[in-house]
Length: 112
Length: 117
Image (tube, rainbow over all chains, first blue to last red; front, side, top):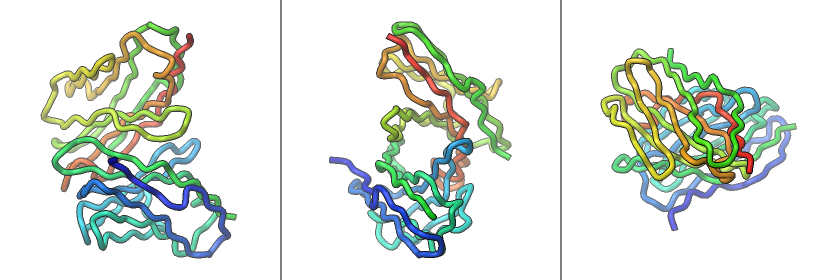
């Protein structure tokens, strides 16, 4: 079954404590992206990756890091989380050959 | 700068009515992509369609249809014979096309559609 998985699904943490949200896809997709969704601010792209070792900034990359060492994984790293990073995060993947984009179920993060 | 406007914040229709969700975009690029996504009350995001800037053909998929008009910078979405399951927030989005479809994606604010039985 085609799938994008994210872990954890829910996380409560404290300011400054480094965390990683994992994203994995089983479709051999080249393209992967991270988005955040906030009330009043809507959906915004954080980072995207066109393939292994190729990443670029989206609209709101500040405070985040990503890596793409393997095609299937695209972790989102918050090195020093702050309360303004409290949000709902979505990972997505797609193939350059087909247009459909697949989303993970979302990760709800609360930074205290 | 790129921008996506969805002027309709909320729409309510009675089941079986047709409804059109408007999307107007701004970009200086000649090559770009447009998208529609659905977010039902359960919260997941669902991809509906991608259209590149060189393809102005209208698209129909079952009860869904999309009208892309470069002359008015619009990419409108019509649901025919709406159903309760169509109740969701719908997002229109625009991307540059430096490497592929999903570069620098900008989303509209969304339109919340309620279909009343």
